[in-house]
Amino acid sequence: MRKIISVIIAVLLLAGSIILAKYLIDNKNKPKPRFNKVVKTVFTQEVNNKTIPIYISANGNLVAKNKIDLYSEVQGILVKTGKEFKSGTKFYKGEILAKINSDEFYANLQAQKSNLYNVLTSIMPDIRLDYASEYEKWQNYLANFDINKTVSKLPETNSDKEKYFISGRGILTSYYNVKNLEVKLGKYNLRAPFTGVLTEAMVNNGTLVRSGQKLGEFIDPSVYEMGVSVKSEFKNLLQVGKEVNLTNLKNTKNWNGKVVRINGKVDGATQTIKAFIEVKGSDLKEGQYLEVALNAKSEENAFEVSRKLLVDNSKLYVVKDTILDLVNVNMVFENKNSVVIKGLENGTIILAKPVSGAHSGMLVKVFNENENQ
Image 1 (spheres, one colour):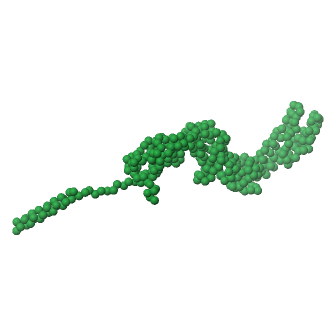
Image 2 (cartoon, rainbow, N blue to C red):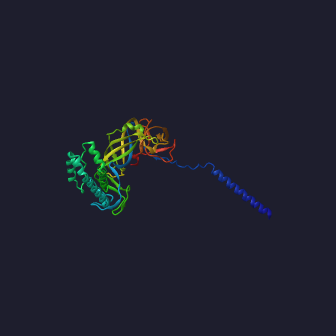
Image 3 (cartoon, helix red, strand yellow):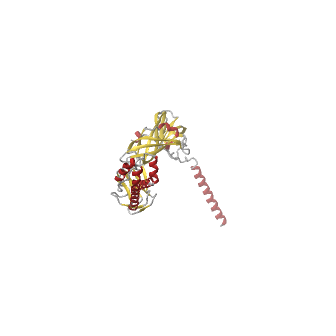
């Protein structure tokens, strides 16, 4: 029985070996599977060297040319005027911006005026006796003295003796005390130095205002200035009086400006020079961001491409017989979104759009619009 089992196992092994050998022989010459190579389609453009104008772009925020911070030089309660002391309120030149209660101070001023009048009255008998020729002018001064009006200038003294007499009686001291108080009284009414708009209000009516306290900010909204920084190598492009064009961020509006000032100092950190451009416009606002383009020079035999196409800021992909090649170029100027390059011959085919995974020797297919139609 064991012999029979052994024979059967041997026959099965032999049969399996024959079948395996036949399978291997049949598949020995079977062709290997082929995978289609992926060829990327690329957009290209042809190099056409020409003269390209170089524009330097600068930007900045508008600041009102006439702009003042409002501070109080006196102390008191802020009282209501004809217009509210609020941001956005317009005031004409000479109008009262803010008024501080001056009742107590005014009473003190009137007392000093009264004191001056009394002193002048007391010296009149002596002037009549000792300076008879000068009596009339002092008499006229007293006759025109009005305590409710600004004190007039004292009569001129015609001799040293008269001057010493007037000074010795304290007339000059009393007079200048009054004049000092009159000047200070005017500071209780803060008037607009020009027609403009209140852009910041830091106090309200009824607030106790202290001396030296900031009240707000006042600007003239008709004229603005913008400071721009330009590389020192292009400083010759900026000259006082030169007209420039300014645009907003979306490039939908433009204004004409003029260079009014140029800083004589180069910024040591950035190696730039600050220039100030004056611009007018009813649609301009304080703090608005504008850009200005300055025509620097023209670069001959050059070509402008998107800065996204540059590799390591010095190389560019060209297409040679459906093969990508990486060549060196000379970048002569860079703008915000593009660069001006030299070193490529006319007719050279370069990429028009970046290709992901691009490398030198890569097989590509040039997009043909006619084929797709």
